[in-house]
Length: 159
Picture 1: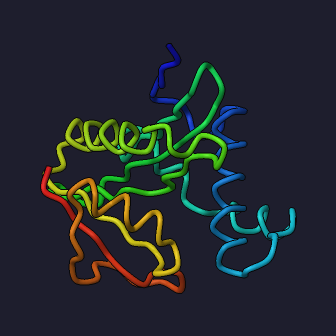
Picture 2: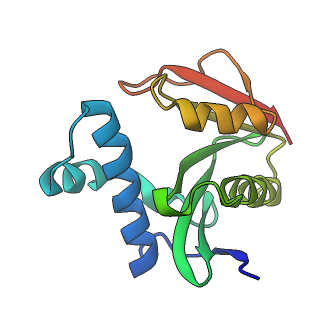
């Protein structure tokens, strides 16, 4: 029986770094409707604030399926009540194996551990699978809590 393992990991380990690159490649390529270049991926990852996904302000989780780095996600404490879910990603070859739900549950636990009572996130309208995942796991649309060029819809969930 193959199991998922989900562990806290520094955002800059080799596996975490590759997952973050794959995440950015996936969302950027979807947005531009063409493959992102290596230069575009590098640019997107430069000064992206990932260092905040470490104690005391956040956490980064890497999911492995049968020992292979397959998923990642982060939690960022926004204030004393709210944490933001960010960089949630499951590599395409591992999708459909229940890892995304397990990853969300682990990230919600990490947010609780940071003292958050509510999880929030933002995403794009074209990321239909991601939006469906969030709704299936109890996230509902909320008013915008931040602004940015790649933010179309905001979700929240009481923890």
